[in-house]
Image (cartoon, rainbow, N blue to C red; front, side, top):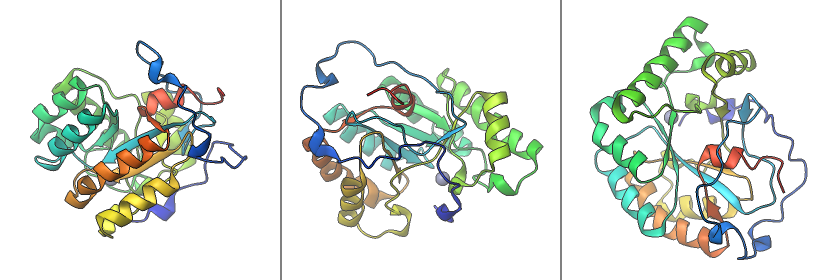
Amino acid sequence: MLGAAAVTPSCTTTGKKDKGANVAAPTGPSAAPGPLPSSTGTQNSYNRVATSMPFIALTFDDGPHPTNTPRLLDLLRQRNVKATFYVIATNVKRYPEIMRRIIAEGHEVGNHTVTHGNLAKMPDERVRQELRGCHEAIIAATGVAPKTMRPPYGAITSAQKAWVRREFGYPSILWSVDPEDWKKPGSSVVSSRLVSGATPGGILLVHDIHAPTIDAMPSTLDQLLGKGFQFVTVTQLIAMDGKG
Ligand SMILES: [Zn+2]
């Protein structure tokens, strides 16, 4: 992902420094039956949510990919880890069966536009087309409407965030940890950046179109689970904002 530095400052106000995973006592919601609550919150965008509970959201952008995404889904299923996939409409149309598998296995899907352009540089009507096109492609493939969007490159203006929220109901989802996996730093580097960057309420950004990122997942997931983190989808994470 290019130009990630274009991210605007976070709307969240988690001023306090989290102490990290060592606070995660294994008494938490692993024992809780039933589905977790889901929400799109009240803010126009999120880089993370305010919670001291050891929940994180793992997000995969730019897919689905014909071989890497199924391989990833196997790894997630083996560990009962739920993730969120920010998909591009062209890939949704190309691989609808993978989209249906993502949904069937309890993951969440979000809108990542049609052409993966820089929304901040587009007129509003073009942005609208980008979001509407991907929204409709996801529904056509899965029957499920996306509830959040991620702007390509993290590039979106405050004004766009506001009207996107109003018209589509989407909060713009950015991230708190970016290991820059698209620069291909190697699987072990991707893994260590994710593990060291994860904090309660964090949103982790990677891309399921890159094979080395999938290679990094077994070690990453096992280390984060070992530290007591629990993986939830983005809307489940937002539902925890400000709660404990
Ligand atoms: Zn992207």
